[in-house]
Image 1 (tube, rainbow, N blue to C red):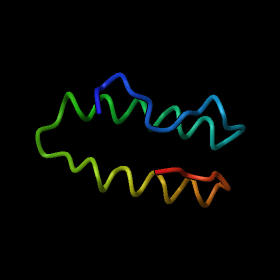
Image 2 (image 1 turned 135 degrees about the vertical axis):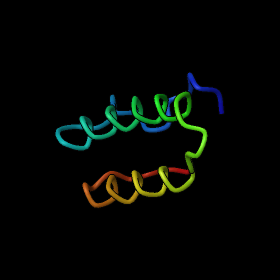
Image 3 (image 1 turned 90 degrees about the vertical axis):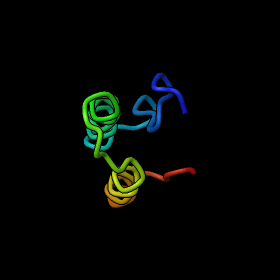
Image 4 (image 1 turned 90 degrees about the horizontal axis):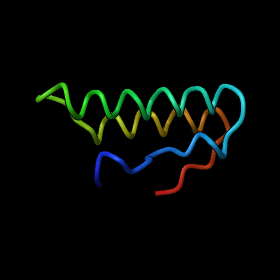
Length: 60
């Protein structure tokens, strides 16, 4: 996946889920570029768990 791909499309969400998804997308881009010891898969799983708790259907 290129760094320009959107992992979680906040434009299709509302309220807290939208704000959280947009934050997480920006944070993912930052961590991809800033940290060498970053486990992207664990990060994705955590974000998807929170989004599901917020009532968002997460597609893989």
